[in-house]
Length: 205
Image (cartoon, rainbow, N blue to C red):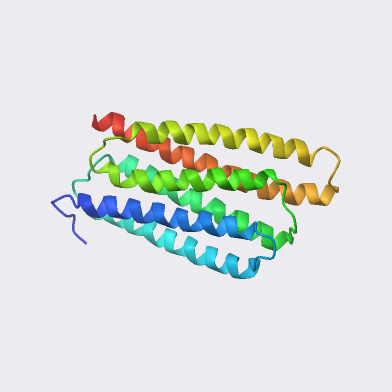
């Protein structure tokens, strides 16, 4: 396929918005799996499908970068943003998969706060993606994501302290630590998204 000589800016922005929308769906599924009595196998299937759709969107972004002569902003930043968005979904999928594979019955109460942080952060990200077109009103986005990430870090430390308090059996500690680590990585990946948006906005200002 030859390189396009005109930038398809609207298509890039639409794809980033689509990618963020997948995250909103994934975070909602993650919240569902915490509910008592939820059908975890069904939720895991839905999450795998959402992750597959997110991968497809990422591949479309990469394909478009490679076939577009003039991109709306630096190619490296487009790759970085697409990759970070994809990472968030991958870690959410990993969290759900580990809960199912390990047969985790009950998660530490603080995990609900982590998922709440994640849901708020992905919604802010979904709201921010269309604003890449104008590069306006984005500063509040990355500031708030940073605040949420710090909140998530504090919650993560409390979860670890609880896990090592002696209230859990050794095998439970190992399983739950894997789950909460995957959840923490999803939140960290959202901060990477926000950092990339900030980097893009600074370059384009």
